[in-house]
Length: 301
Image (cartoon, rainbow, N blue to C red):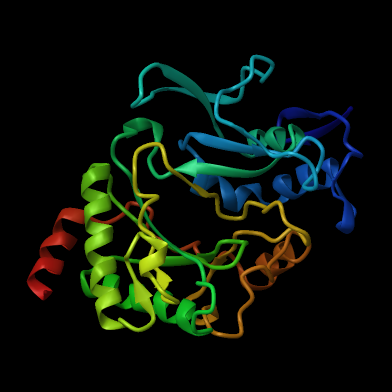
């Protein structure tokens, strides 16, 4: 057991020398220290959001544990929210409102925290819209870039302010801060309608067809995360992959054919922040009205 001081909080990290990324020599202590260092830029993106923990007690080569319910041994200072399940019953999930909470989760081998698209103040109303982009098998190499910039153009045309991050896996997430006035049904409907517009502009490269056998080699503009209880990997979260890639906020000029979505890693992202700053630091987190954007989209069709 070791203790990491985070502000006025002493965070216990059990089995700190346990290797979570064996090929990279990254231990649990190293993961916890990473979240301590990146936490200040990460917290504004995750505060108030229920967390879905992806834990790897035996490292990334071991079994993944997907955990929503807060275990009884979590300290009292970890935020919590009780959530009504649509299927019935309730569950209590963690909420990371400070850096210490992120460090504590890392000590529990939570390599990758995923967070809701809404916050505890109004769980039924998202303040984030997400488009999930992954390359298709055998698709055009530039389709990923076409999709991201196509979404950016369409969103800006209805006066929304999109941002982009690498998924830390194979693609990008295009996200839009919302003002929380719309519910999830409205958000999902709008996201699909806008994705249809973008796919219609690039019919040979992009599609909104959910059935894989009907997509061909076209890239799927995935809007399915825009639903109650769905989550997205948190900005600056580490992915459980060799090399410890990070879901990194990007500038739009970085979204090009030469960018490697797994190229920003736990080992280089802090230097990147020191050199370039946080690309999302000026993002207007008050968000935009989806209802007004929907009206603009309808007028443009």
